[in-house]
Length: 147
Image (tube, rainbow, N blue to C red; front, side, top):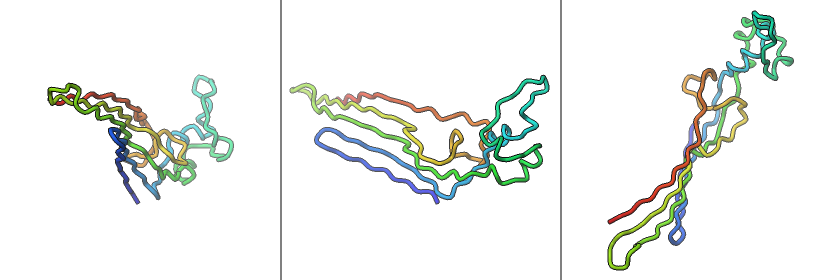
């Protein structure tokens, strides 16, 4: 189930608006943890110890075939995201004899994600967490001058 909510509040010359999305019953295969949770992947061919996930001691998987046949790494990836929040101030006319107006806006995208999923992002297009570049948090400041 996917839901969305957006709203806008105004008080005098200030306006606060936000957009949220949620997904419930969303499941992801955590391929990153599965690759680092197998005992055979701990030692590199050069004899150096590689990184291991926290599940390394819990699973007991000794090779990749056991990992791929198990649903251990299918994780609940339900989430609530605030995609956008904006705060604006409408200064109105800035000159008495002219119709020039000013509006100042501050905006933030990708504000937060609430999820029990431990990977980078619970929202994936193919359902497999692997080779994902994290979404950046973006701040924008805007001036709107009307004539």
